Image (cartoon, rainbow, N blue to C red):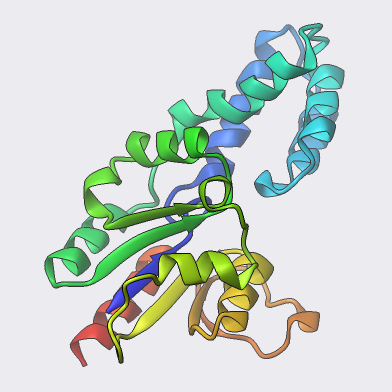
Length: 216
């Protein structure tokens, strides 16, 4: 069996790390503007927002006057030190890998940033592959990134995708002909995204489903 799995807000709690960094940065600049913090988080849009808009929101919230490139780098890198896996994820991945499941991260983002997150979260030794949009030249939901992650798959091998983003992870996997498990984090499935996939509230629950599928 091959398991493809998203990184941000699936394996690691990227949003919690970014929120903590935003609050620390805004208050460290002498501000305590809840509206500014909220605007910055809204511009970030769980990591999918336009980086130029995030930089503008950061300036508005903090009054920082550094060049855009410097602030963009801070947005992209400083929260990485706060990245942690969701509870139970490392242990569940270890059990799957020891049981013979091939595990590959499939993530949009830069190699520098995403590989730093993987290392910070202690995931490096638990992965058989890392497929990143910057490095392969296509991003989720493009089916080609899933095809890259499936390279070397044996005939008849089961392949599953786990992710938290309905469009990038679930619909992208569907377009690539792969079954997917959606980690909802308590959200409802978007009504304009077709039939709801297999849905769980947490990544550990998704990994338990994979373990049950692998051993059935």
